[in-house]
Every structure is written in C-alpha cells, then in structure tokens.
Image 1 (cartoon, rainbow, N blue to C red):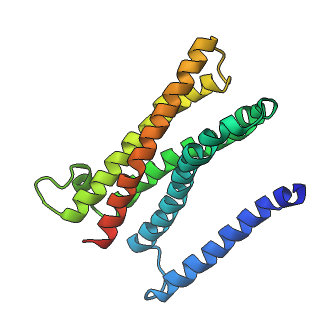
Image 2: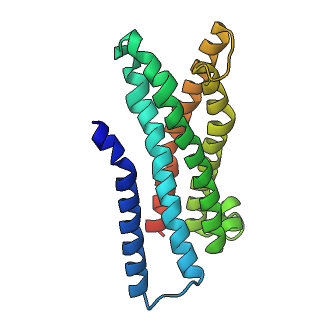
Image 3: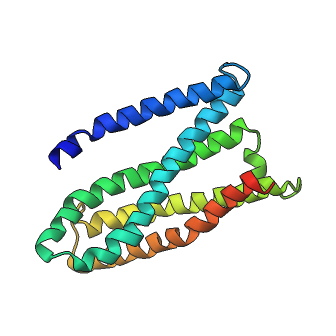
Length: 200
C-alpha cells in the first residue's frame, strides 16, 4: 500500500503529460497550431472540466460515501477521518470550487457570452446562453456555499477552530445541510451545462 501511495505523484505527472500530448496532438490536427483565441478557449475548457470533476467528485464523495458511512467506523478510527482525510479533501474541494468558477468565467469571456449568460440571455433570447447561464448561476451559489458556509462550519466541526461542543455540533449540522443543498443543485447545474453544449 505504501508503494502504491508513493507512486501517486508519478502517476499524476504521467497522466498530465499524456493529457498534454493528446491535447496538442488533437489541436494540431485542427488546421495547424497557433496560440489564438481558439487555443486559449480549448485550454481553458480542459482546465475547467478537470477542476469541476474534482469539485463535484469530492462533493459526491462527502455525501454518498463519507457521511453515510461514518456511523459504521469504530470510534477509535474516526479521528483519522476528521484529522487527516476530511481536511485534505476539503482543501481540494474548496479550491476546486473556486477554480471551477474562475475558469468558467474566463471561458465564457473568451467565447463572448459572459454577459449574455449571466443575464440569462434576457433581451437577446439565445437559448444556449440561457442554459449555460443557469448552470453558471447555480455554480456561483454552490461555490459561495462552499467558501462562506460549509468551510467555516467544517473548521469548527473538525476542531480546526476551537469552539464549544454545542457550537461544534451545530456547525457540523449546518455544514452537512449546505453540503446536501449543493448536492441537490449539482445535477441541475450539470444538466444545464450539458444542455447548452448539446441541445442548441
């Protein structure tokens, strides 16, 4: 097991290198290669998808794996989750959320629909921009919940920030409630994004 964990950085580096090779190879086939708006749009979309997968993947891990199974873990083993696993997962979780929103805004700006999408295309009436705008707004709400509700309360629940036991219990409940809210919003958000790319 230790050998497998030690090989993880090499695996990540190899995966990234392979992705870059495939990326440049596919891009080169598309009428040559140049650092134009199409290139930066494609690169931004790739980054956007990668961090979004990490964000939503960890959201679903928390809500479909960790939380439902915590009661099955012996009490003496639970500190490993609260002190090691959860803080590490929450680090990637919150920064992936921030980078998903940032890269999404950059991508929308590069493709010229940022303002129209954020106004849900009211006035111009472009269905694709309405769909992706709904997804963007849901993403913004979810990222807000991550940074300004879930993370501050999780710090108290996990003991990263010292507080009274009743505050700790209340914070854990609040964090879980907003995490469940984000899980509820995640499928409509993804549906809106996929619809924008495939229905219009």
